[in-house]
Length: 601
Image (cartoon, rainbow, N blue to C red):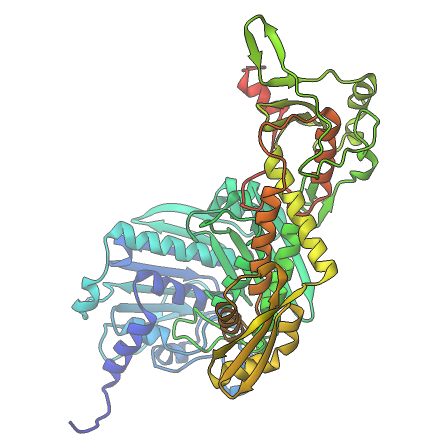
């Protein structure tokens, strides 16, 4: 067959296959155009899941009447004009493909009144190559785009559309993502002439969190930590949910780069690593995060639908996201207080209350053996033996509890032990329940990690060095990151262009598969530019050691030992969760207790 130029209409329909996957894709493109036009109010009307009608109305700058026909031409845009502008592009759209692609598979009408114009104009297309001349139209400043009968002229594409309910669900999800990207814009969504939600402007943090609660649920907002961090030209802000709010699916993860919603492997990997120590296996974190950086440092022109980006320095971005979230999660401990106005995380002072209520020195309970505990049972009546052990507080204890709320530490003072598993304590708010094994496991684990960090990772020479065949690129990476391997307790030499040899591995990983470990690290370096593989492996060993070296169930503790455990929880990073992601303590405040007993009702 001879080479021939494709008709313009077919070119647009091919482009539509990349840009317009379903009605939700149309919403994304049209709303992003409204945002680029400077709109502060966007109204979206849907009929029959978007198959019959999609209407997006905004109060943006509008389109000049002489540009209306050009708006439906391919590669026509007001957002860039040179390669330099493309490299610095900060607008959501810039390719000039969305409107002509949508127009090629629907009946489209654009009505607009540009800023400074006395009247509005409209232009229509019916899926063919011909575009009608603009005609006068009564319209306020801004633009309205109507898309009717989507895919009416491409039956094969229409056949792949799902049920109305399913398609509208995708639209609602897409608009949520867009609404979370711009708190300075109000959004309204209607389906089949029924208004579903209106999101007003949200300038203040409290207003933003109200929008957050409306879109993601109040339970999410109750468990989030607000963060704002800046470093070396990178800024990360937003909300990250505490590990106890983990999800069975990755359905509550919103990440924006310079205001653009992206699904990026590097970002996902950095977040997952930050949560690794505090999430239950198979669970996913929840977050709404915004990364801002110089547009020159990120390439947004790598995907037709602009879902993906490419960072100029991926290793720096990965490290910044990981370190920021890692530190925020490290502060999830009893006594954490978040300033809802500034987002600053403060830790309540616990040192003044570090001495147990009995007035004696803290017991070194962290040793797995050697407890000075008297095993005794308390009978409430003949023939009944209770596992609830109540120890009478000393006069000093009673005096301490009666002090003002400011003097009571976050986890309060121990009252008793329940079933040999839980510690019951009283703080200023009410009742505290602590899973003593889970709490001690976290404390022991963090001490092991700190010891390894301060003392370095000791290496163990292999009796027989392991030779590994690699690609030339992997060999270059191993040579470039030689210091990284040394820091992680590995000795790796290059014997040839495609041959590496492992001469030593970390002592704590003695017996591990050296070749597999090397290949996994090289894989991380290829994809992410860095690797935490060895640290992760060592942490798994330390976690196992911590689990075996922690207080076991049915161990009786004295009041002094219980209070010592509570004070260490208040000082230990990530002590809200054990190494497996389970919560270590819960608070039952007086309001909740009153509700249980119907007090005041």
